[in-house]
Length: 498
Image (cartoon, rainbow, N blue to C red; front, side):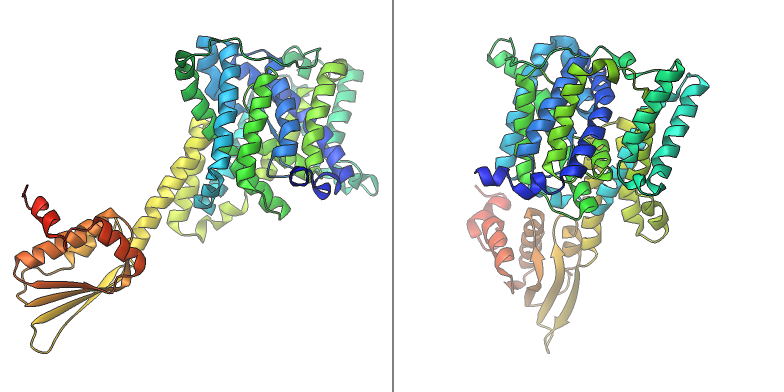
């Protein structure tokens, strides 16, 4: 068990990169955790404690090394009504239940359903997140003095050009250098710009064990269950999608079911330490990877550095200009967006482009990642079903005296092709026998079985003998289980018997 959760190469295979990237991520987590707390309507320390707990716990139990999990905006948006109507204690209880549901999802191996998410949806998800990350920075760039624009531009200049400086350019990640330089500039020049300290008061104590002070009864469960289900679904969707993206960036694989369990354990820990529910963060994960983070140590240290800085170094952290962090997040936005997908719009199939664009539009329009992903998957499924239905056709033939007619079906018979299957039969043609050859066909669902029954029964009504041959094992099983054309008693019921 210990070896499963503590593989040496996952923890100490990239120590220098993980330490530096962990520090950069911690700095970027602070204003976001505070902002997400404000969105949810709770004290800033709730988001900060959550980010610390989730990052540290997921480092041990998560299925994707190097991925950052903490308090997120997508989760915070789902908490607003709960906090407003019932308060913090109910939020903590909901966080615990969210964790339990996610652990159950892990044991039910629901992570495997990520294989149903098409590439077009993943690309749309990535592009939508890039847009949302950029849009989240706009309030910091609206109704401000020119100093903010100058600092942000200077930050982007450092981020993109510092790596090209000989020798030292590769020693430190440019986002960290940007934060340090711009903080020093603001401190020594006294420029009046918005800083991290203006986001809210930082906590001055370590988190303590805190079990929600609420009545443990069915009424409480009915209040928190709908919110917990929503949080669990959105949290797992965002985490598993982020995991897929980090897999691509690092050319490695992750354990989706372990990730589900890990997110659940992390959220339970967060709820017991006075934190809100969270999940994987695409922006912070991108910062981590681009800063050199690859192992579990980077995630662990991001959480540890975050807590140490807000509790013991708050005087320094509060003077970091928001413009520096805005520059880092704009860099993340630019790096996250799949620019190649824009060029491919001319070459990819129209259905693929529509799925990608709908995923982007719904996600950005609703600020709900789950809604965007589900819309994309649903649309992709409809396109796929429509495409597959066109691959079904039928060859017909007669014997020498035209007394026997054979229908040889080829392709997939399911709900979208069932009507086409039925219309192929000529019910007015007078023949002694009809042979329905399914050797090269496959029946997928009840709709397919229903139209087969309907066709056989109608052909028999017209006086023809009907024989169904060639079913493969799977088709024969579903036809035998749900079909009625060879079951006289069932046919009588269908025909109106008792």
